Image 1: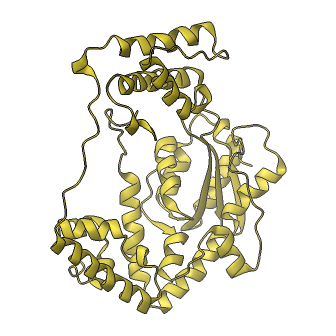
Image 2: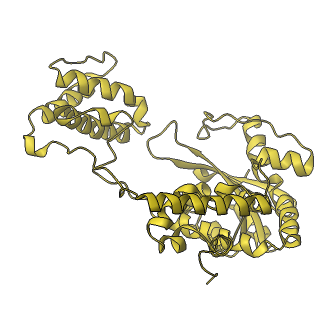
Length: 353
């Protein structure tokens, strides 16, 4: 466990000696409002480390050291986004073992499945509801965390050798490059859409306005108390409350404090007093109506994809998701955005750049 400056310096000195490091993260999104980095696991050569981010006010030296390395991850997107938000770390070279396994045609590509396949070791199952922000962490949780990177370097080496032997190493590098690009994109939340939780489509007019106001009230409450929004009020209760208020009834949540109840009622009243012109409009129907010819082209492209995937022992959806095929038929320029060069070349959608 790395929790002091001397320990961190030791880790940095180890990083200086290698070009490749395995990384994983543990985050807390079930017990706080904003997802936060709780652990950073690293394996360097034959050494395993667990960095406690709570013990440091500045981990920029670690982020700077990692920027120079090839980072091995299992399913890179979540970890890269979390590390960018938490440490301002932007990877420049990654080895994603999920991508490698799928390019090799491996269908069971969870970390547990790959460790069992290559090392004959059965990893202990972790709890998705574990509180990684608790301190001290139980030994079983630390052991679980360490195992997330302990096998990654050896796994990457074996996968890399197989990719090279099959002539697919360039495919892999292209896909990892795209993964870095995608993880760097900011995901913005549309203010007109974020409150439209599952079931919101059934609400219209005043009821939809009430739901919108209650959703924003819940966000403020959750942020103020640093708790997940569902701890304040679950989605189904938001929907029921919007229905009740629009029907002239006042739902009573007895577990609310006096202050929270007052803010809850005030949010509903704002919507009840809102001008008709300010009520939310129904969600517009998305997409264009496809012609029979377009549908046929999509099916033709799908059959071509399925045939090529079968010949190469790849998952069809990994070669090209159906949604990507549909978008490409609607607009051929989408191919460059949605598919990397090796995928486009196999499907006859343009040669690699």
